[in-house]
Image: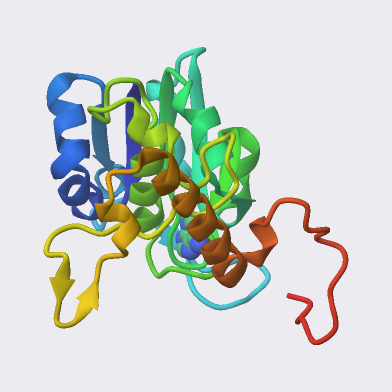
Length: 238
Ligand code: ADE
């Protein structure tokens, strides 16, 4: 997949996406990544990219000219333009899977108090938020988005099973069971005996129970059959 990231902070993207599995995805050609420095298209000798908001308000807003200047020449009929913003649709595994089918993404990372809305109206296909919190730098959100999408591209994870079996895979809505490795005894804390037993059927059963228990504790909203609109006594409506 081809991805262009447009950002004022290229290093925030190139460094983490050059490491580990994303780095290997680039080397193998499965990810064709270019990070564009928006500053180079800024206005005047100061390369100005932002300005104060009309109508008042705090912070600075990204001007439309530098963004259009970088993005328009990169667009083809196959391109989808994504803006990272806390005002976007909340990102999840289903949306990651949807984007992993695309041929070409241009990802704009917003900054300061936002991006001139003519960018959203004239260029952007999808506004995406990575969660209900505000980062100081949308480029961090762009990295999270690219990692979650690219690991779903066939061949990026060595073992095809590894993205199918995990939490949030399409057919399971449970978190994963706890994992253990050597040593069997660490400072008096034992690996559950069942995992050392070699009984594959019982181990699978144990994993299912543990997955359900962990989901109930950490993410009750994901437990199958739970009606999200009803709350038992004493349970917070959050
Ligand atoms: N920029 C700042 N916060 C963000 C968020 N939660 N998601 C996407 N982009 C952002």
